[in-house]
Image (cartoon, rainbow, N blue to C red; front, side, top):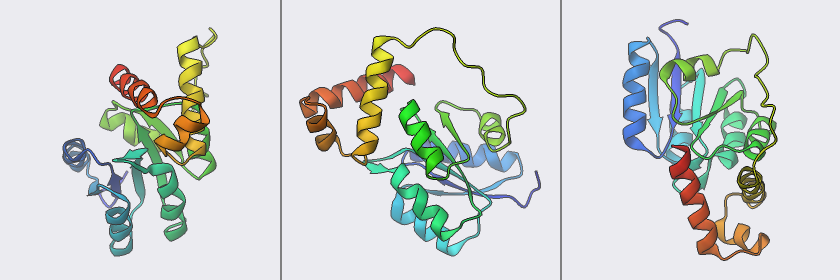
Length: 177
């Protein structure tokens, strides 16, 4: 890695991005942060980036929807999706839309840097079947992705009250972090 690398960090958690920028600077990586779709696209139009770390949930905006826009503007950009709400459905969708990798928070700077490198060995698959709770979460994430992150439309599709869905999403995010 050279000191010339430039990264775009897109995450609505400003404290997290500040810490990450400082940590990357110690690694010789210049990083610029954006906190939503419009600031990310503005940064991309003003600067050239080698890599991008994109949060899946940008304060109600979908990182999955932003991903193809980023790649359309800069096809050579390596984008790593980072989220606190990991699911197989969103991993598959992120990779389908052009992400080079997908990591779940919390992550270290080394994990982020290494997340852009090709895997030397395939990841280990777990041997036991998923729990009912994990299967429910995967299903919710798949339907949420199909509805472009729209909570109300997802709740209707799941035949679930919107508040119940919000509680499940909130409970899971606290459990994961």
